[in-house]
Amino acid sequence: LEHLRKKIELATERIRAAKLKEEQARK
Image (tube, rainbow, N blue to C red; front, side, top):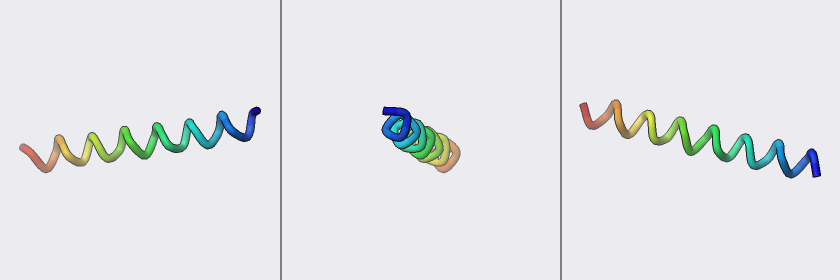
């Protein structure tokens, strides 16, 4: 279960980074 949790955390971090990049590119 812990292994899966780490995978989800990494995925969320990646999505968050992508959203930040998109916002910066918009400016």
